[in-house]
Image 1 (cartoon, one colour):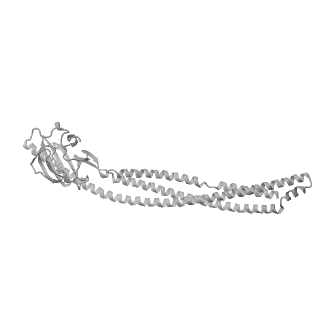
Image 2: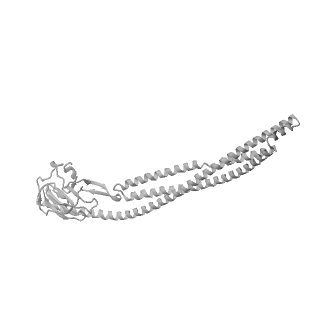
Image 3: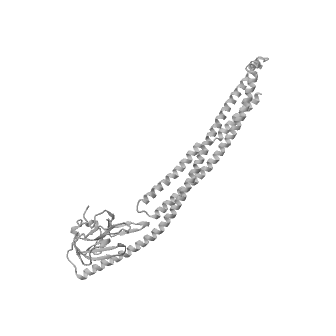
Length: 388
């Protein structure tokens, strides 16, 4: 009987150790998975910030498309990571479920053994121990019987502890299953949201691609129109220069280097664009031969200096255009007029109204473009206008 009790004890201890070794730390896995997802989400968040900055300025649609593609790639990585985690978590839950079943079986077995031992103890009662000891025929027999009872009591205590450990193990497995299935449901919901986000990004990409093609066509058309109108404007100025040369016009004019920084402003308003090159849409560059001054449609435009009207009429996308000749090769140009209030060869005085602003249909909105040229060369008007 002693050998049987010892064998049962070793079997129970071995099964407990085996279950402990197979136990999976789901919380640790969840934390590791979450850190990986957070890392990918951080990258995508940075891309989203970059896209908002692109949209906040005169952005290029090609740059927006590139950003959307990178966001799609990051979202795809998140979905693949969630798929991997869902697969791994499902395997973990299967392992924990199997451990739970084994632990419950072992617990049931040990409880049955414990119940049997308790029944035997209660049947024999407390006096049985003394009967066993007093029935010894010799001192050696007494020691053997005492040792046997001692080993039985140790196995009973070990059996009790094993039952308690298995009960705790079963409870722990059940808690792990609750946490694991909750995390699994969360990951599946999250995966659905990421797939929706991927679909949304794909739709946005298609719209941006359509806008890109439309913008490219519109930009090409606009640049072609501007190029034609600018060429025509330069031809007009060249013609005026040639006529002045044939007429032998010479002497000082009403504009000269000595009055730099003292010309009045043709209209009051903030600058929409400066003189020189500036980036345009879709990786293009625009050359500004003047400055754009914001002003509501219908705002009176004043001549910045005394001069003679060399041109007054419509000119393509520039709408109404007035060119004043100030002598000495200096000319001022007033573009995007909705109304012209002067006629060819008319002499105007400084501050005299020559027309009204327009530009409502232009890219910059209602405004006036003011240019200053000498011998056909465009100069920076801000150098000549009064500081404000």
